[in-house]
Image 1 (cartoon, rainbow, N blue to C red):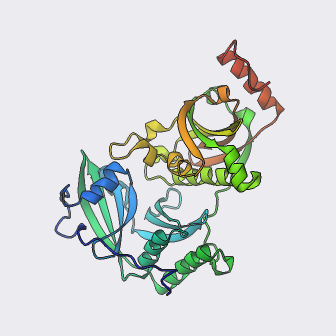
Image 2: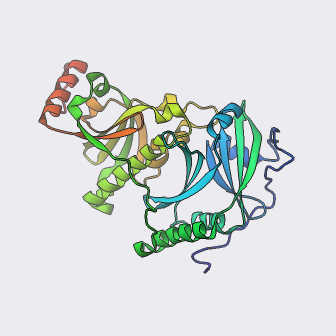
Image 3: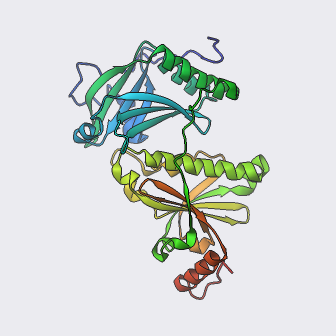
Length: 346
């Protein structure tokens, strides 16, 4: 395999990995400093890590040991898929068809390092999966196991990587792409006034710059695909209160700027001691990586003259149908909430 496609990874031999001797023990903060940084400072609930021997390890971090017990009742498996031009390695810990639970590791195949990490997972004899709990600012090593892949699984996943790398769909195996769950369309006017009056978090982007770079159609596709990637992660989040949440996604254009607003603010869902809200919140994680992202701010969609585009309720995503009646209704709600201010819906 050529080095351009599969560049070598060099491990840092100063790094330590959990082993049989640390199982059930609290990991020493100084000895496992990089793990504490990944979990505590960067807020990663699951991640791949290159160890001191140049091997790639996988980590799942749970809020408590009890949470680990509840969320890992079945035999673990790893499924490779593609989504939005990325390779996903979904670590399934619950296989119940009605309530499956998976942790989706994402690899940008255009990045040489991420591509090499993904290929290393496929080609090393086995991959260590470490389960940790983070409580009271301490990491506990719960358990570790080894995962390996059949020759067929390796070949299939490598074809996905090759297809994404070369931009050649001929290599892509059948049913490799994540299928979007069926999305229903409902009238936006069916949303209750209490939902339409909610405040939330706005993600501000330099839209004119996006248009100049991508063109209108591609810019809109980029924004919507990023939003749907965040929704995909919400649907498969390890915590049921995140999967079962409800929120609305709005859009507003003002001059050269574009606002994507999520209502209500989701910060209450991500007030987890070992995560920063920005890292834990999938909307922050994905939208803030866009080159034209400017900032986040508290926002009332009605004040921005925004229109609701998507509604998520307990795992179901709805497209919202917009019509003239909606604009009239939003105008009335605006005048009730902000009397004396000129309505952006006129």
